[in-house]
Amino acid sequence: MKNLTIADRSLEWLLASATDAMLIVDKQGQIVLANPALERLFGYEHGALAGKTLETLIPERFRQEHTGLRSHYIGHPRPRAMGAGMELFAVRKDGSEFMVEVSLSPLQSSDMQPVVMATIYDISARKQAERALQDSERRMRAVFETAVDAIITIDERGIMERVNPAAERMFGYSEAEVCGKNVSMLMPSPHREQHDGYLAHYAQTGEKRVIGKGREVEGLRRDGSVFPMDLAVAEMEIGGRRMFTGLVRDITERKQAEAQGREMQARLRELAAHQEKIKEHERTRIAQEIHDELGGLLTGMKAYVNVLIERAGAQSDPLLGEVQGLTQEAIDTVRRVITDLRPSVLDQLGVWAALEWYAEQVQQRTGLRCVCDIAPELSDLAVDAERSTMLFRIAQEALTNVVRHAQATEVRVSAARDGGAVLLTVKDNGKGIDKTRLLDKESWGILGMHERTRGFGGELTITGTPGQGTLLQLRLPLEAHHD
Image 1 (cartoon, helix red, strand yellow):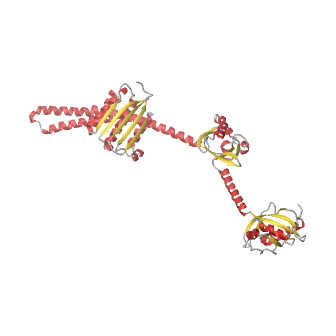
Image 2 (cartoon, rainbow, N blue to C red):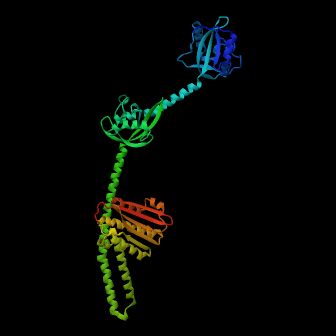
Image 3 (cartoon, rainbow, N blue to C red):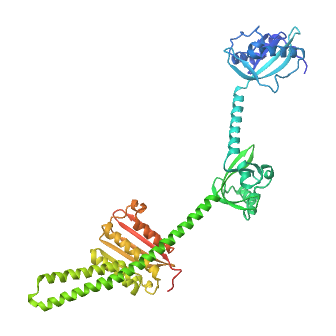
C-alpha cells in the first residue's frame, strides 16, 4: 500500500465525520488529532487529547512495553492489526479499562513527516458475549460428560456425531468407535432396519413418532445383549443443519422390579383366591354343623314344648307359650345365620335362583323393595361352583351395603348376557356412594369385591351420583363356561 499525502485540513474533516474512533499520532507518539468518536469513547472533552502521548490511552502496566513497540512500528511502518493474537486493553479518562481492537495505517503529514492513523474498536460487549458463550459451552460439556443418562447426537441421516461417557458405558462402545456410523447399530432387529426409513419419512412429511416424546424401546449392546430403555429425542438446528439428540436411560432394573411386582400381585391374588376357597369351605362346614347340631336341638326343644302345651291343655303355664315363641325365634335366627354362611339354594338350584331367593329374603327382613331380574337367556347357562359363589357373594356384599349405608327405598338386581360375558348389575335409589369411600383403601368390602373379580378375570365398576343412588356393575367373562 502506498503512503498517502493529504492536507491536514482534509484529514481532520475526514476523521471528524467518521463513526469509528480514530486518532493520528506523530513519530514521537504524541496525539496530533483525535476525532469526536474517540473522545466520546475515552471520555475526554473536545481537543483535550491533543499533544498527549498515545500511552495516555493505555493502562499503566502496559505503557513501558508499548513505547518500544510504537518506536519499532514507526521504523517499519505498514498497515496491520495491532497486537494480532493478543488481548489489548485501553483506559478511559475515569480509569476504567476495556478491551479493544486496533488497526494501524502509516501516513505522511503535509510536511512529509511520518504519522500513524489508528482506528480503535471497543470489543467489550463482543468479548463478554464470547465469554458467556464459552461458559455456557463449558457447562453444557460438563453436563454432557457427567450425565448419568446416555446422550447421543445424530444428524438427519442417522449418523452419530457425539456420545457421552454414560452412552459408552451403556452400549459398550467408545465414542471413536461409533462416531461416523449409523445409530441403528445400537438397535436390535426389526428396529434397526426401520430406523432409516423413519428418518426419511420424517424429513418428507414432518410426521413425528418419537421426536419430542418419550417412549420405551430396546437397545443393543456391543456384546449382543438387548435391554429395555426409555428414549426421548429432541430436534435442533445447528449451523443450518438439522440435528437430533437422544436421551437414553437403561430401565432394566425398573422392568425387573415391575415384573417382580406383577408376579407378587399374581401370587397374592392366588393366595386371596385360595383363602376365599378355604373360607367358603369353612362357611359350608359351619353352616352344616349348625343345621345338624344346633338346628336339631332347637327343633327337638320346640317339639317337647309343643307336647307339654298339648298335655296341659287349658291348664298350660303361660311361660310355656313364651318358651315356644322364643324357641321359634331361635330357629329363625339359626336359619338366617345358616343362609348368610352358605345358602343351600346356591348349591341346590344354582346362582340365578339363589340371587332371586336372596333378594326376596332382603326384602322380607328389611322392608327395602328389592327387585331381581334374571334374563331368560341365562336360565340354561351353567356356571361352575367357584364363579357361582363369586357372583353371589358380590351381590350379597352390594345388597348389604345398600341396606346399611344407602338410605334407599328400592334396589334392583339384574343379570344378563353381554357378548361373551355375564353382566351383573346392582342399582339403588339412595343417597349415592361418596367418592372418598370409593378411594378409601381401608374399605375392605369394596376391596374384597374388586379382588374377587380380578381373581376370575372380571371387571368391577362402582359409581355414585349424589341423591340418585349407586350403580355396581360386574362383567364376568364366560370363556371357561358352556351353555
